[in-house]
Length: 360
Ligand code: SF4
Image (cartoon, rainbow, N blue to C red):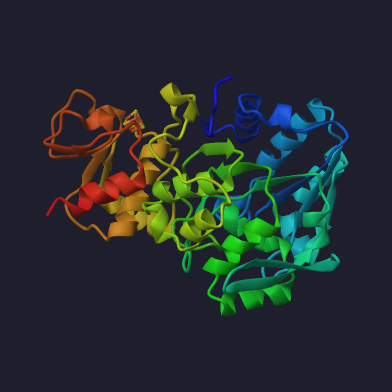
């Protein structure tokens, strides 16, 4: 059996791309028709997914179609929006109410759910969490986060997405406790069985969106820690720079991304070309980019690295239009003929950030 840790599909057709990703994954062998399956998207606040904060309904729709094809019919969607927003309103703004009607899938607002107190401890560290019962009383939890940045924790993806499964009082408490340790411990208490990551256009800087960057990526795998440590590199961070990642590794939540991680890419030879140059901060950073036929994965990695490093030097060239050409600064293997370039197809934002920092 071939072991695959992470599948990445470069695809701008969100629904079909999700289905294609799942059909290449082991998910079909992990679920059984008699299981109750819970899907946990990121419905943090009432903004459409194009803003970069919330999960696209098409990703969740792809998972529902896949599960139904596998004979699973007991499917529910669970979430509690952040404090100050109404989960039901978020479901509506993001199109999940239509999804619920179309497929007969229940939408649960966890703000209305019963709470169970669960302890997580290790010598000198003890937490008692108020967990929403629906997140515990399921046979199989599929975590469906958005790959995006966070102003406090730097990355928010699989591990942090479970914060939507606790009471509002517990959410406040998490901030008092400094976020990182409780997020890591929460992932010992709530078991994620599979993750499907919406990497279509996550925000560059904030969890609430407004600076979406087109990546057109759908990722999946069974290990939330492995996925998060890989996704940190896509935003320009090492795993150690996202505080909860090393703590989760210490707790045995999963493995860390490394040279031995088995990554399978779908549509690697036809990575979607960027349809636009983003908005807000992403657009301002585009002033330092010379783009010609860039794949969205390469372009978004470069924008993330520019944001991460604060680089404000000469323009960096990126894109297939630079193949076989010469120049000064290039990003990606297409610019292999340039005087200085970072290789990879695409390079991660972490690799580009190191390249930019070493320029001067
Ligand atoms: S190196 Fe070229 S082909 Fe590869 S992802 Fe970047 S732009 Fe696309």
